[in-house]
Length: 280
Image 1 (tube, rainbow, N blue to C red):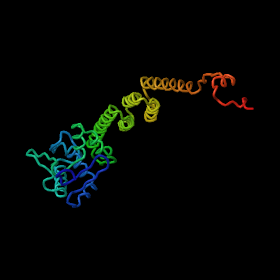
Image 2: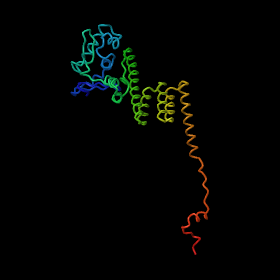
Image 3: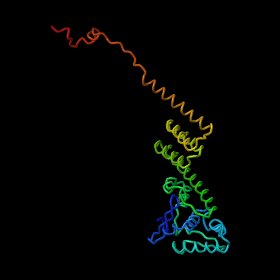
Image 4: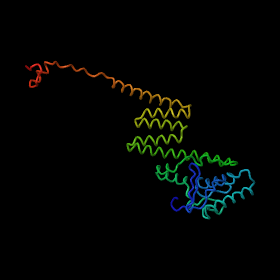
């Protein structure tokens, strides 16, 4: 449990919910719409109370106003009962929000760590896409919001991984630098600009073969690469081939011939040596 929060909500990756006092809260996530509402209150920007008309449009778009309001009130009541009376914060205009002092959420902590210049801490929290594998029937606006937020948080995670890669490269740790750079690229496998950035980064670390493999991995995800990426790949390939050819020539370079010194000269040069031919 984080700090003094009573409930821990993890929604980066699969959903996990637990209370510090051991009471049963996991049953909440078995109800898709209540889980979606809880996640939205925890992760939506700007953080804080959300307008009721926004919540109604997201989660009950096909219900008339009275039924939609009744459904929202019931869902908020269930959340408050399960998480604690202080977990849901009402506002005078009818808006509702999640009390961060009661409910800790990994999304908020992830973004706070990135904003605070702590990418290592942030990447430890990023277990996967927001609500990975989660789907709500009959809430298309929520699904569109979810897809946008998944993409945004994935890009932020990639930025954090690049920050770690550049930091390790500056410290001379090429192995860790390459690992974090690949993590950044893996988060956005179909982004050609990211693939080119990875290639250039690996080349800068002196690993042209890895840079070429990075291009080939990108091509498997997105075979329609642009001419600029193909030119970069050919440039890296030519350099790698030239270096390999130079190394091969060095390996097979003939040894300089050293003439064998005559036996007589050896004997003359070593007058104090015992010679087998001088024995009687």
